[in-house]
Image (cartoon, rainbow, N blue to C red; front, side):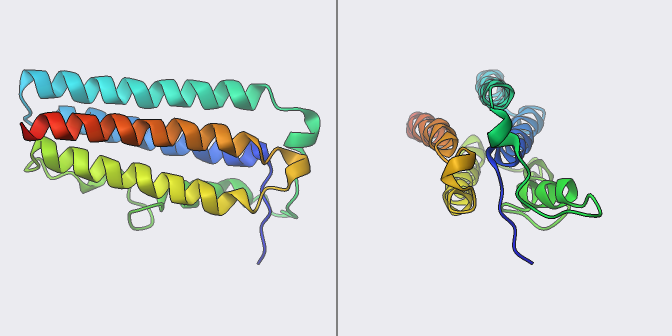
Length: 164
């Protein structure tokens, strides 16, 4: 089965990935971290929510051409497929990144895992970049990639500070 995604579908996946990220940080903040670490994790959750807002704004600004369906989906299964792709990015099917937290992780463990998730997001979006035809908004993927790479840099800075 071959799928081609338009910018609207890609942004739908980006929204789901950002929601999963915010949930991960919120759950990590609930799991026995110090006051300052909780505050940092909640700030990271807020950053994910800001990314989600950015992607929602991008999605609302799409042209009709960028929203045009490019995939034959007679049974309406594409939304489920997109959900599974966003959820399955790094973890097993049906499992979200927050489900991987045990409560035993140090702040460094959480930041390393988060950096891995962000890197996987970049790879995910780079892979999808080829699936979105240029005429349907491929350039919008560049905006998503910039947001994710900026988040990796910020997490790297936090990890370096946590090691000190």
